[in-house]
Length: 80
Image 1 (cartoon, rainbow, N blue to C red):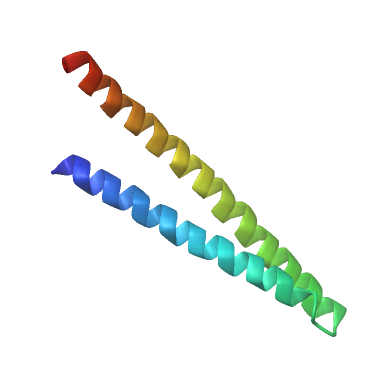
Image 2 (tube, rainbow, N blue to C red; image 1 turned 30 degrees about the horizontal axis):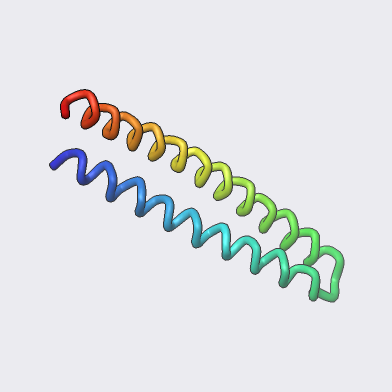
């Protein structure tokens, strides 16, 4: 049962991070339509930070999921 919660948690966090990545990309696209330079800089750097953090979290969680998947697969191969 504990393993199921591990998978649910990591997949849920991966989906949330993907949503923030999409939101950051949309904010970045919207920043280029702003009239005032100060508003552009605030939106540009904010969206860039969202993209950077969510992208790095996505990569980290994908690596953790791949390592767990390989461990599960290797355990099944060695037992069977």
